Length: 503
Image 1 (cartoon, rainbow, N blue to C red):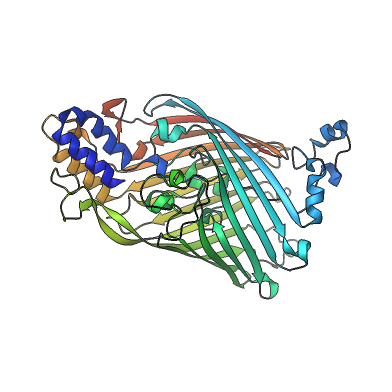
Image 2: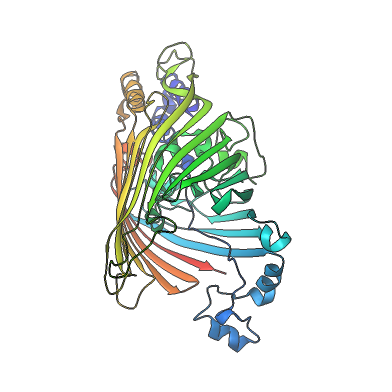
C-alpha cells in the first residue's frame, strides 16, 4: 500500500498534471478505511428447537400469536429446527440492516444502506453421535449495500461494524473438542475469526462502531487486517482454565487471511475458501480473570455480586511488513529518487488490556445495572505500524426504562493515534514537493477521536431496533478532502438506525 502511494507521488512530481490528484491520493491510501475490519452483531446457534412456548406452530394464527413470545421470527422454522435437533444440529439466521448518513463533515454529505446476513450451523457430537464435548461449526456471510465510511467519511475508525465489500463468503469452519475433567481444556482447529474470542470487550458489543469489535491497531497494522470479520484464517486455539476464575487463551493462525500480499484482502479471497498457509504465523496469548468465578457461592443477604472480567494479552505476527518512510535503498520513500519499494521489516507485535466491570446494580431489581469497559492496544514498532495506539472506553446502562428489561443505553469513546513514522512520511511529502504543487499541502496526520451514543431497543425477542449517533473529530488524523483538496476533512456527525432480525 505504501509502495503504490509513493509511486503515484513520484510520478506527480515529475508530471505536474497529476499533482492535485496525487496529493489527495497519498493522504487517503496510506490509511485507507478499506483495510479496517469490522465486527458483526453476536450470533449463536440455538441449542434446542424452540417455537412459541416450545411448540411448533400448527397454523397461521398460531404462528402470528407466537411472534410475541418466540425467540425467532420464524419460530421452529415450520418444524425444521425440531428435525435438526434430533440429529444434534442447530441453525440460526440473522439479518442486520442499517442506514447511516453524515449530516456534516466527510468528503461530502451522503446517506447509505448496508446489510449483513449471517448463517450459522452447528452439530453437537454428544447429541448426534454420543461423543462427549465435540462441536462442529460452519458459518457464512452475505454482505450487501454500500460502505459509507470508505466512500464518504474517510475515517480510520469506521462507523459500522458490518461494513464490508459486497460478497457471499464462508466465514468460519472449525471443530472444537472439550478435554480434561470439568472441561478445563478445549481445543479448536480450523478456519477461525480471531475477533470472536481475542481482544473482546463484552460491553463494547452493544455499539455500532467497528472499533468496539476488532480494535484499530490490529485492523490497521496486521496484514489484511488480521483474521477478523469478514475474514478468517486457518489456525488452532487452546483455552485452558487452571483454576475457576482464570482462563488462558492461546491461538496460532496463518499470518494473513489473504492468499497473496498487498491489495484488499476481501477481494483477493472473495469467497473465503482460499485457506492460505503461506503468510507467516500470527500468535495470540491472552489471560483472563473473571469474578464471580464458575461455582462461586452467593450467600443470602449479601446481594448479587458485581461481575467483572479483566484481560491482558499480546499478539506477534512474523509476516514481513514494509517501513512507512524508508525505501530499500535507505532513502526516503517520498523522495523523487526513491526506489518506491519500502524497506522490509520482519515481524510485528502489540500488547493489550481489556476490562469489563459492573459498577452498580439495583438491589430490588438486579436486572437494572450499569457497567463500564475499557480497552487499550499498543504497538511499539512505530516504523511499520500505521497506528501505534488505540483506546476504547464507555458506559452501558442495562434496563434504563421501566418495563424495558432487555433495552440498553450506551455512551462510549474511541481514540486512535497515527504513528510518528507515518506523520514524518507526510512531512517528507510536503517538504519534497515541487514549488506550487498541491503535494505541499499534505498535512501531518496525528490522531482521530469519536464519540458514540446508542440505544438498543428490544422490540420483540427476535427483533432489535437501534438508533445511533456518532461524532468523529479529525477524521483519519487529518487528511485532505478529495472534493476540496485545499481543506482537511472536517468533523463528522453521523446519524444511523440499525435493525437485527433473528429468523
